[in-house]
Image (tube, rainbow, N blue to C red):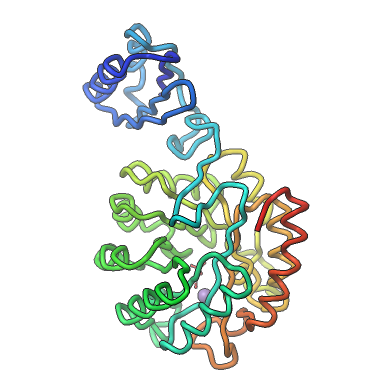
Length: 339
Ligand code: PEP
Ligand code: MN
């Protein structure tokens, strides 16, 4: 249920409402608006009628049901787009398009620092790189783990770029959160509910990737898992879904971007690297994602993709990434964004 407070309602009235919501067995989440507060009361739908009585409380304007199964992620609860602050210089979901770029995996100090310097020079605002890698094969490179996190932190110190890196299980989530600016939940873990709850309890923004066979509603329910634990800083990422098509690694579902934009206030970014699997398809799909309304992009860039430990075929060399960023400027302007 959504409890809409009257414009200018007293704090005491709001506190009484919060107390009553808890007494009814629901969890209140206050959303501060420009003129009034709105309180999302979330919990088991079966008892929602008891909340209706809140309508008669002082300072309350109305009590309305949230129709979608995802509540906190829904535009019904918060109409204005969420802008998620990552650092002093970087926010996601505002007018500025945010590009996160770097290798699939952190492999060595030289590799990550060269990558960070190259993507920064091309205009990316954030660095990406996996230290814990969820690989389809147990025999594939699994990442440098904490050593990789330390190298990412070093690259951040040298370039000033905040970084996003993946969390693969609840046990190592706190360790990753000590280093990372954004915690990435990968496609393979996007319905790992124990992991979603864990990152929901941490005070770090989360980049949630869409699972390979997830509907948009399931995707938003996964975001809801994180938000219902108290972490509202969720960024959604369309990274391609599995279809019958084999010419590309996945099918980048660009129509998900306007659909998500209609249903949720959360920022939405696109990953044309995993979405296509081939470096020569990355730039056109990056431009298309911006045209479709994406708030940003995550792109794999590697100084030596032929020798990459993971995802070499879809990684751009720095020179190609430079070209992409230069042309992206034009698409950004057409979409009324800055870059
Ligand atoms: C990655 O970002 O390198 C990655 C493993 O992505 P996904 O989870 O989308 O496959
Ligand atoms: Mn990858």
